[in-house]
Amino acid sequence: MLGSITRLGESGRNARWWVTVTWFGFGALAAGALAGAAMGLAGSGLAGILGGRGAALMLGLLAAAGLGLDIHLAGLRLPSVTRQVDETWLARYRGWVYGVGFGFQLGLGVVTIVTSSAVYLALAAALLTGSPAAGLLIGATFGAVRAASVLPGGWVHRPPDLFRVDGLLRRWEQPVRRGALAGHAAVLAGLVAVLVWP
Image (cartoon, rainbow, N blue to C red; front, side, top):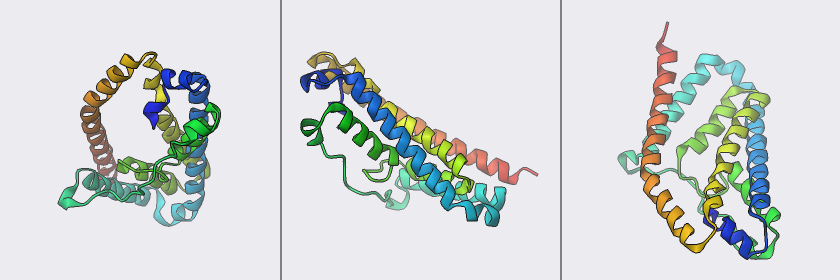
């Protein structure tokens, strides 16, 4: 779907790429912020029970479990819904409508296919802050990262560009996945260090 939101694709639908992408970004940011704030509010009771170290321990345990699921440890796989955004919107609605709609769904993180435990970990982090404001900040950051997923479409002006960008993204898929797993492991190691440091 995100491969359809390109300069080439938008011009073929008589839409402006920058308008669609701006609304996509707004939708992803708003949804992430809303989800993060809701999780922070929902976790407000946990903050008093767990305390700072308890919340860090819980996040560390969830990060470890997520890392195990991401590498399919013991054959386990990440739980996920199987739905994607509705691609018929591309032909049915204006660019800003499907832009904000797709962005909002991806910004929520869990209403479309989840490919990384980092999605669940971001929501768990917002929950464990016990603060709507802190949760909003975490969620907005998550939404902004999701919003950036459509930016490579700006390089696609002609059909050959689509193949070039697709090839580039495919070449970077595994290195980025390994980098994300390494980052995940580094966060986990940092949490462990904080917990065991006197």
